[in-house]
Image (cartoon, rainbow, N blue to C red; front, side, top):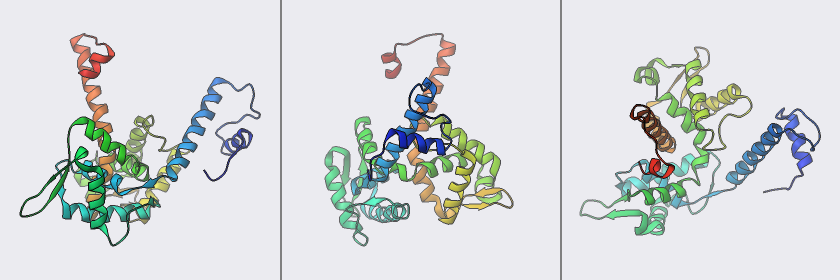
Length: 278
């Protein structure tokens, strides 16, 4: 971190942000202590993430998890260069990802991940790379992916919420702002225990700021006068990549909910271990 701080100065900052409304350090109610602790955890974690370095191995892992069936080496090189650009415009700290040398970057990353995590196939037409699909390997690739996920998380949740609307609304007619906001905040609230990222003190204003950022970057269309939001067909690869950040978590929530719902009619119970095995 760039500089140290005292608890007193941090509490002063929280009061200025209206996170807490009391003075002093002692005799805080338990709820206020929880608020202070949670805020401190979020701020420290965000500062830590802001200083993380994104390596080629994280980028290759993220791309292969997006394409579980694998892809040719040429396609992986092309998408690696595309992802480098997306990370750069989001201010990521990149290392070992030199512009103009995507082939060497991919070859080095694939070699580092090695046979433990990847499957490489060679034939007379083209070489291909894919992730090994056993659950332990997928967990390890997700570990590598986590070094870059914070650069995309908020956009990813928003895009996932947009995909819950009809094709006509997403691409042609536009999604009404109020409905888009409701579904996005629903997902953020659902996933708030999974990450420190999301809307905090002023959800509506933060949501508008996020839409403006995505619009300026050319990643969606937001007509404030008509109050509608549209996706852009030329950005489909970006949307697929963003959703791949969130879909595994949402799928886990869905499967768990379906299983719990079935227990209601079976009138049965499980120990924690047998529940997780199921």
